[in-house]
Image (cartoon, rainbow, N blue to C red; front, side):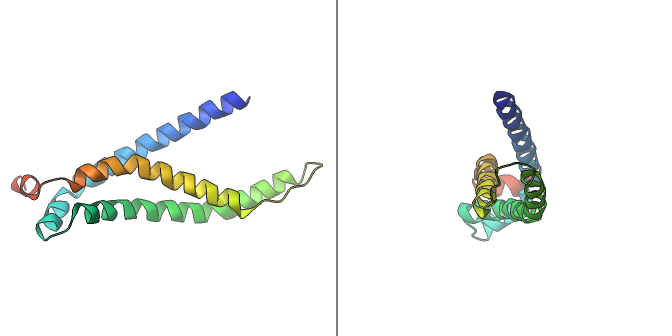
Length: 127
């Protein structure tokens, strides 16, 4: 049962990461001209990468803040039926948020690095 749980959890993480990568690729494609103009005006590659990553991190943090009360309520009710009681600590929620952020950063960073290295002449010449 534990092996099946880990396989499906890993499969869900891979599917979510592919969706996140597709969303990042679409966002970079839509903002190519903006990235080129920012580069012309002196923005460094690091600032471009930070600009792209900041948007994803904002949504991940909002999702965690919405999910934490729901997860706490459901887990607390579920744990009450057991004979041995245990407390839910904030550490588990912080660890889940850290794992979600790290997976998102690993997924999105490569595409953001490619977007940060784009030469402005290439992006602006086709527009």
